[in-house]
Image (tube, rainbow, N blue to C red; front, side, top):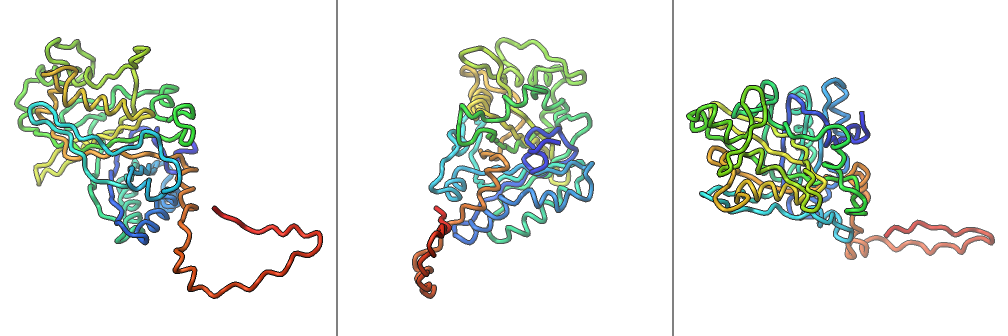
Length: 350
C-alpha cells in the first residue's frame, strides 16, 4: 500500500465497487472556515477510524479543494499554478457544460457500501453547519466496469509507470505543489430511452468501441467518436496525454434518474479542459461529441488535490487572533533578563 493510499489521497487506487462523490461549499464566516480546515487536514484520521473494520475493503478518501476555499485557507501562501474555477462551455445544439459551486470534494471509495456511508456520515457530522451540500452521488460498479449506456468505461486509463506522468504534478511544473493533482468532476444524466432506441451499431459509432468486446473502431471521418474527441496529444511531441478516470454509474430507477459521474485526475489541468472543449465544441464546427445527444452535464467543478503533507499542514495555518481579542487579554508580566550564558530562546511563529 502506498503512502498516498494510507493517508487518504489515493488518486491512483484501482476502481472499487462503491464510491460517494460529495461536493460541499463552506459558509462565509471564520468559524465555518476553521471547522473546514480542521476536517480536511485531518482526513487521514477519519479514514482510519472507519476503515479499521476491514482492511480488505480498501476504504480511502481523496480531498480536493476549490480555488475560492484555497485562497481563504492560505491567504498569504502560494496557490497551485493552474487552480481555477471550472470553465463553463456553451456547446453546439444546446449541449452546455455548466460551472457549479463547490469548495471541497470528498471522493470516498471502498469495496463496501457501508464503509463509504459511515465515512460520509462522520465527515458531515464533524462539519455540521459549516458547510452546504452542493451535490451528493453514490456510485457503484456496474457489471464488468460498464456505464449505464452498456459500454466499458475507463478503458484508456494509464497503467504502471504511466500513472505518475498522468496524475502527479511535477516539481518542475510547480515547485510548491509537486506531487499534487488537479481533479474535475461532472455529473451526467442519461436519456436511456433515446439511447436504447439506437441500434447497437449506431451506439458503437457514437462511442468508438464495440459494445460487447470493447474493441476500438475506426472513426467516421465526418462524425468523430467519443473516444477520438477525448484523446489529447502533446502539441509539441504528438505524444498522447493521459488522465486518470474513476467514473461510476449512479441511478434512482424510481425517480427515472440514470447517469455517469465523471471524475478525472490529471497532472495538467489543461488536458481535461481540452477534452471537454472538444466534446462540447468539436475539433471543428459541427463535429461535437454525439454522446451529448443522450447525456446532459448538470454539474462541473474543479479542485486541487494536495499531497498528504500539504493537506495536513493546513491545520498549522490558523490565523492569529484579532487585535481586539488580543487587547482583552490581561497584560503579561515582564520577562526577567536572561541569566549569564543563557540562550534566551523564545518561540516565534509567522
